[in-house]
Amino acid sequence: MDEERFSTILNTLYFQRKKDGIKNDFGKTLIFGGSLPYPNAPLIAASSSLLSGNGFTALGVPEKIYPIVASRAEEAIIYELSLAPEDLVYTKENLTRIFSSYPSILFGNGIKDDENNLLLLKEILSSYHGNLILDATGLTLYGKLTEEERKNHACSFLLLTPHLGEARRLFSLTQGSRDPKDYEEIAKGFAKKYNVHILLKSVSSLYITPEGKSFESSYEPTPSLGRAGSGDGLAGYIAGLFAYATKLFAPDEIVLFADQFLHSLAHFAETKQGAGSLDIRSVESYFVPFLLSYRKESVC
Image (cartoon, rainbow, N blue to C red):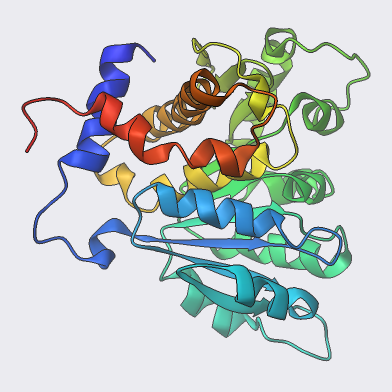
């Protein structure tokens, strides 16, 4: 995405909002994630989602980490996540009601790789008609689906966000290349076959559409994002934007903008602090000054 278009989208999303807007105008994002080993993954995603400018973000987490997440989550609604036979919090009726409230869902950050979560993913894919982003363990669970289950998803927009290790597993590859371009052709075939969009994440990114289009990132490398949690942050930010930005921009532009935004923010933070001491949360602490550096003079 060229710098002029990036600046236009940023100013539209953050500085040209309706003065009489209410939270429902900016949509809701639901994040399913978390487990005992990884209770912070959905929290990082939720924090980034809230930076997107959406109306609010909700979290669906396992009962065992509910107290941890509920005590740390800011401005978020917390659901208990369970499909266990003895504790059917998420019945089909409940899921249908919940799905209707959220234009975007993020699934997989820190979630456990087990049969209950695979059942939940199947239910989401077969019943949810909004924008779905699959990340982290969500991609592992997606890899366990049958071809028919993948092909027959109900989502209006389905985005997979694998780093290259996850992409190799998803595409059943053995090569160890760190260049997303080496995965382009197989990713195009996969995206077309299953009607999914794919954001291949590495030092640079490559975005693939079901129509066979590919877009390379143009931002500078940001070593501060080469740390645990960065993928959760990017996925959360994308999910937050998909709660409302589709009213203003095409989905492909939203993905490209989100990817460029986070890396540009990281680069901005690195110029102020250096890369070695930064992680995703400290990168995001530069959010407001970064926005203001793009604010157009004509905008009041």
